[in-house]
Image (cartoon, rainbow, N blue to C red; front, side, top):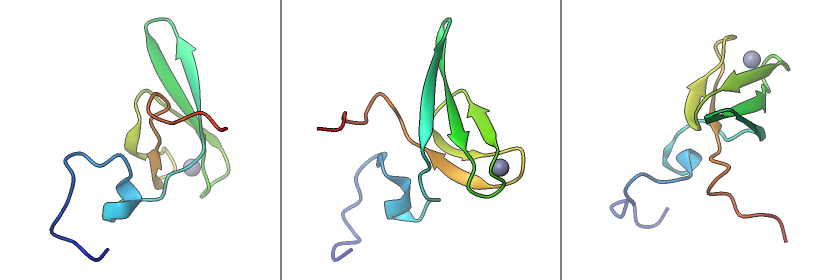
Amino acid sequence: MSSPEQLPLLPADPPRWGGPAAVAADPIRTQGRTEYAVRCEACGNLHRHIAPGVRTGPCGATYTVPDAEEEAPPP
Ligand SMILES: [Zn+2]
């Protein structure tokens, strides 16, 4: 916050640069790709996305789907 001029390339944390908040996502590995099931905080339903990042659900809510590959496992 104190150095707004130093922005990293492709930040992994969109909320830091003004993006929508990240939501809890369950990666679902299917044949050939990974899907992300997120519980929408706006409508309470599960929405599926085929890629992480800033997504808009079918209900119109916008949120950030975290990248499971980059997330460190809990200690
Ligand atoms: Zn929704």
